[in-house]
Length: 349
View 1 (cartoon, helix red, strand yellow):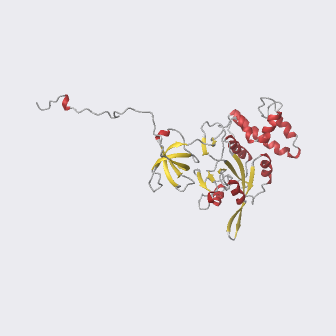
View 2 (cartoon, rainbow, N blue to C red):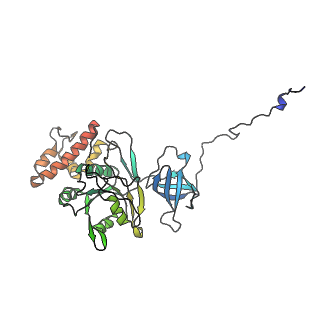
């Protein structure tokens, strides 16, 4: 009879998930290439595959699903599979992130629980600060140096625009306490623009991975363009009303110095540097001369705050004689950071 059917007429639908049992084993990617992450842009990672070898080549990759929420940042050493040829339109996959030697972090402010990783595996943090236009902010310098020490990195203070103001006050403030200082200035001549002090800075970057951090408008991108010719990093001016620079770099990028002398990481200009990720007890590491006084002379459990009874830092300031104002400024910077971290209050540099 038309329209009649039995079970044999019905085709069974196969299992959409397949018949193979699921396994937690993951491929070991033994044939993966090693690469350095030189840039990050909206889920795409610019790489240098097999760096410092005869087979070195650029490539673009995405993060493999198996990495989950693990972040990949500039400076990471990773393993990649897939098309690592670097030809136009090719796309590799990052399948593994190597252990990081150092991690430089910051938060939006001192109450923000979200850490923002700036760069991995850097040896040295270069705080780029203009001596004028915009005016230097010592508390910002102290905060960035604190983050560098917390990350296990060395700190170098690079003072720009010495043609506009004397570097002596800042050199006197930081050089005696373990922060190396280099001074640069721009000079216009018949042969074009020359940066005095560039050779000194280049020497301090040789053989290292250095990350440059600073406010917008301090001349950071100008330095990068001079250090790595042909880079073409955008430069900007300082706003006449606010005294702040305009952001010219939108993301961090790793660049190799000429003659393979080292690496520099140019970062976007920052207007704040939160230390929510830094433990209060570690902040003294950014002030080595104060740490020595606190360890030798402060009573056990001293908070080193302005209201701490018998804190030896106050006596140390009083003993300073002609250096007392500089000592007082250093103690004030430390206590401002300690107060901000202890109370969760936001501190603007």
